Length: 285
Image (cartoon, rainbow, N blue to C red; front, side, top):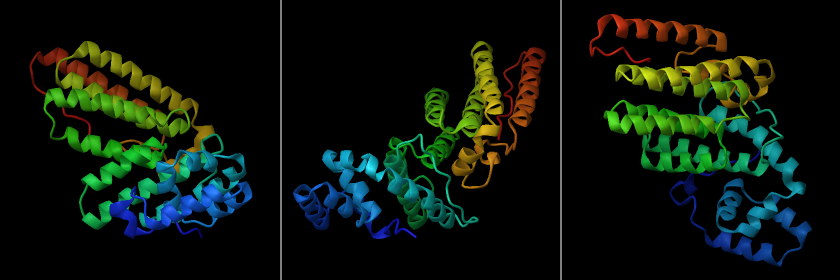
């Protein structure tokens, strides 16, 4: 098992250490074969940190000779993350179409964020969210989902002006999962758009709500279309728990989500038409 992370680096995750400086010096003196050995013999968190600062090392880490190495670490990372979350252990499936070094870096910063969360015993603290944002830069699907959780949390206390901006951020963040996470990504996106659609209805903006309704249905149709070919990406994104983790209602199938959303939307429109009042429609929970 790879040594993934050392919690002592949490508060200085991006600050170069004396050991890092020595590694950088040795790297610059080494030939290519020696550089490969240096990287493989170093802790993952150290390489992620150094590559953040030193472009030459970041570039070298993306060489084809290291692709298989990073890919194996990514797959093994599934064990580290599932263990952290106290769920059945799993290996991630390979994701060859993505940058393998970025997968590992995203894993590092996401894991760091959840260690901060555990240590501080606080949801969405500064240290957690800063690490989540860093992980998103490297395409971490788990960080994207955690940041969505953060945005939904902020929406609970937001005024209308703040909420409108937060929903746009939520939708944009959800789109980062596309196209590589297939049906799962489209379910996450549909869930975000669906919440925005109902929020618009609550504020009597029926025209915009209709537009978002169509976008949500399009996302759900894409989720259905890609379902069979997305089984591996669903397992990776959900850490083995399935498509139910992609949406707030826990639907296992896109068709179930679509049937529910269509029915909910139509009843909401009928309620607005019948009441002609300012009574709010209950927001999806």
